[in-house]
Length: 337
Image 1 (cartoon, rainbow, N blue to C red):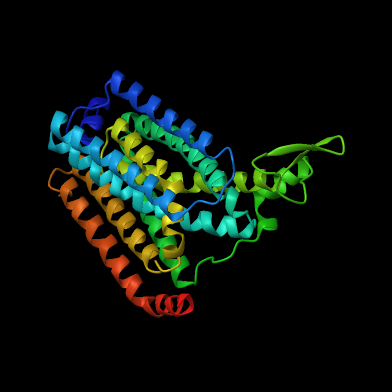
Image 2: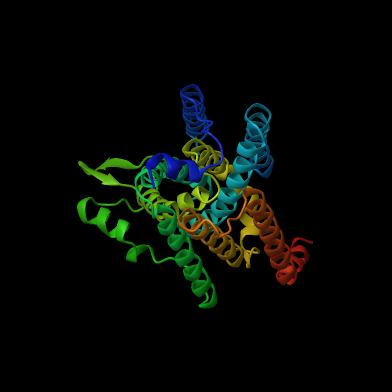
């Protein structure tokens, strides 16, 4: 199969990512990141009102962009964008749960939490960009790239299920983390946080602050999440621009969404099962796509059906999670009263 035919199989329409749109999107993403860094330069605890405001903004932004794509480029890229965005957003919620564990393990002060999350988001965007480029190169040169991506997602889904059945990891041992051990080997670490500073000169020597350690730990988890996140969205669309756009829009709003969902995250006890089902479904879709290119009689799964499955699974696991933890919510209400 030629490179052109592989790329054609990856998406049913020509790439919507014109040079101008790529440039505008990258400038917009960088601008929003800079704005977030400016807003978090002075540590403060995030109020629910502030978090809700930014969350609404970061949800309205991709919705408006998706509507623009639908109106200007047609329904196919529009459906692919919304499906990919919803997929990436659901996977990002799982990221938030890990971020919550890390912030707790490192005893990050509430005023510094959003700064840590922002570093994590910036690192995730860089890593996703690298993996997206590698994914596009693989699709253009390797006939079995879809099969490889599909198997990665199926293995990830199985691991999620096994971890969930085994009880999962609810605590993190900071001292056992490879990134922390490596950094401590080369530089001393201060006893406490020093505001938003990552390093500080103490007793005449440059030392790391605990903030640097937690940022490194968060970025290390970003790498793990990128391994399954990027192949998953390539199962929805083969357009590298849409893959990048869905990842960028899903990640940009995580800082605010964390504070909105912080209390609810512990109640989403069935989310991991839903993510496993979604990843397995996309994995099967990719394998079928690969097989269809070899044997034309093998059926494929349309993007609109993928959107329906993702919505149905997320709705189901959210409702079952809230029902399973209804007593926990009631106990909190009694304590508040």
